Length: 407
Length: 132
Image (cartoon, chains in turn green, red):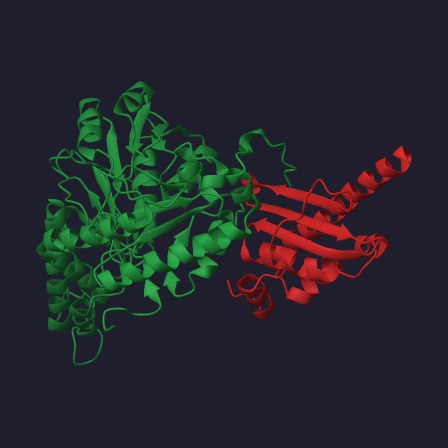
């Protein structure tokens, strides 16, 4: 059973392990024998060498998304990139208008940034996605106003893995001369990105979902036509004044290397992951009252988000103690609310509570998938035997007609 | 989140899972919670001629702590009179299972389930007495 590593890691959308090749490149940028210099040091070879490494990394990141290296601004991660893009663009264009459009299924880094702008006097429209998680472009077109300055839509959803039609949105925003920001934290290595063809103006990226390190990300900022944003972090004027702070050479090199590998290997890797994903779904979909959340076709290969009706997600995860997955159940969050993403799809609270997210990646194996199928089936059966809701369902009682004592 | 050994024990080996005949005059059924909140407990108790709880069964939809709380409660109520069972407080469950603060609502729900089951059996018995 060499290919079954217990506990099985199926939470690649939370984070990925750093690829050994990436870790090696990073380690070469730390010690006295390595490339440890400050890339901003212009007066000696240590600085020049570090700057060369950063330049190479910048080129690798730009290449994966079809950008010019000069359009890449390093940040601490996608959250900071989202903040810089949305606050930076909103503030810079505040004299033109103070209306922003986004979607209810965005990551909190976008939603909470928008909430902050609302507190500052901006107006934000939060669009509902369709039941499959995808945005209806006509609804976006209808929401655009004279004073709209920015549209922010994520590329790949972190919970359900659906891929928005970024090119169609970009064509619309470009024709209306509105800036378009894309949170693409989950995209690199999973789905092709071309900021030119997609007419994207700002794009948030990070390394740690693509076999790179945590703590490093980037914001793509378009140069032609020039997109201007207000800096959020001030200091030494690094990154053309858009993001000050000494560049973390080892982190940047790690991100460059993992994006380079993604560019080289993604096609083959995605085929392999999709086969495992299909095997997982084939192994589970014949069970009763099992629902796939999000569109199956417009979806990254590694994501399966499934609701097991009449079973609560946290207890399901407790049964799956040898498998690392995540759940949309309220019990796994601090908010005591079930997944806002699943609710935005029109899933009822019960199905949101009953959901598990399986995300596969580079080091997943078929043996792990087969083990997971077996364990999940066993756990769901165990918990349904304990579930009064399952009893009632089996007795033909429609749970929507029951008067519950909500607490 | 790390669970206590007792929660894990009750979760993996739940006691008294099942269903009693809800129409039986000696059986009280308490169903509390709501699917939308992520917790539903069904607790049933059966009393003997002396009014002592001789059997208890549960089924619970909810997190591991909710399942463990209801499993524990079935053990706690057996052999008690209805008055004794009604005196069980949620903090006894919290202490026994070492529930963390975010899971205290599970123990409250279990206490509510006991109260609901007792109310049901008393209502049935009240009817039986007034009919007699």
